[in-house]
Amino acid sequence: MVMKTIFITCFTGLITRNILSTDAFDLLRVHPDLRIVIIAPESRAAILRREYGGPSVSVAAVAAVPLDSPTKLWWVLATNLLATGTRRVQRRAKLERDGGQLEYVLSGFVGWLGRSPIIRRLFRGLTRWLPERDAIRDLISRYQPNLIFATDVYTPYDVELMRAGERRGIAVTGMVRSWDNVTSKTLLAFVPERIAVNTQGVKEELVRYGDVPAESVFICGIPHYERYREERRTPREEFFRRFGLDPKQKLVLFTPPSDTYLKSDPVAPVILKALETVGAQVLVRLALVGKTELGGYQPPTGVVLDAPANSPDFIEVHMDREADRHLADSISHADVVVTWASTMIIDAVVFDKPVVLVGFDATRRPYGKSIQQYYDYDHQRRILETGGAKLARSPEELFKFVERYLEDPGRDRDARARLRDEYCGPLDGKSGERLARYLLEALDPAVRPRGHSTL
View 1 (tube, rainbow, N blue to C red):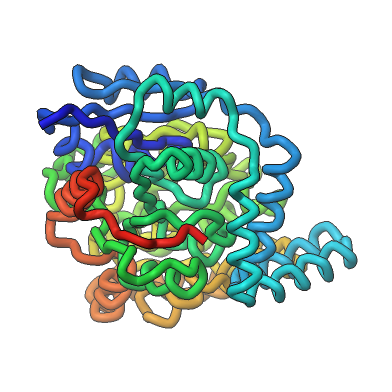
View 2 (view 1 turned 180 degrees about the vertical axis):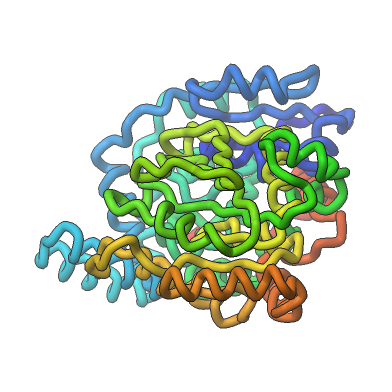
């Protein structure tokens, strides 16, 4: 068999967790007839080369230059053409935060246009006219890839590379990176000929909002959750010893929101105050992206801060196997997880941990600055509908929910199972294998879909 080359994009930092630290990547890298080139920003190329490079794996750096004016316009249009409930919430919140009635009206009008399949097709046709950077042309010329695997189809960098591949007749496979992307990011600006998703729900959203033919979507599951369930966890005594905690006492894991989402109103101290008499130790995992506002809070005995490597944005964030193992240990040894509208909800139910959501602010705030807006997003509304997580509207209610779960961790187990089934997909230990096989099949023109329009 002739050696073939696959590009794997890593413009979003969490791809290290989602793909590069999973069985999918491990299986691909040992394939005897495959060369892998990880495409990443210059700022992250060295660390990726050190951790994932090898005889069959190289890392190609691309300058993360600011988007040019045509691409910025494309991004604005793509965002506003997405006609989902989440976008309506985001539009309303922005109006309340920043004002701008005219912008609000224009954005709503574009969203209304986005309900038309014809408009969406025309917009995707326009993406063909976006400029192609010399760096992308040079990459393709240098490595001559047989397949481009775009791991986050909602970033402009992945879209640029997918378009470049299509122009040259290169096979293109995309992936929806996370469970909330389809309804909260942008209109899918480029429809690849094949696309992998985590769950049936994401597939249905892609068909509805992304105009992707159902037969082009492959459900693989979530590869990095296999490791959560299969790898040996750090023993409880050893884990608790790291933080000076008592392994004989119960533990609440609390992950507060960062200033990326909520600014100048630190709710974390209010929550920690409410938990002081709940009868459990508290491990506070600070934000991975952005800063956690603690408002000068000084943790008393039994409350410990855990500060993972912090990043300013989701491009620079890096979560290697050891960091992900530590997160999994933290969840596994917790008795209850207190979090907010984040992926931690899904992480927690993988371990069947009771989840209590923070649904209040430190002080009364307008909707556009309130934590409440996030629970009105489409994907969060569905989370609440499953009953697999409890939304606390006050510190008192939060205390009550946590106390009940500490007394009876089996409470709402069936609802958590529904949530897990819907948002994790098949947890059968084969997600990475399925994804790797899907990508290898895409390298064979005989199995590629024919006649699939990217419009």
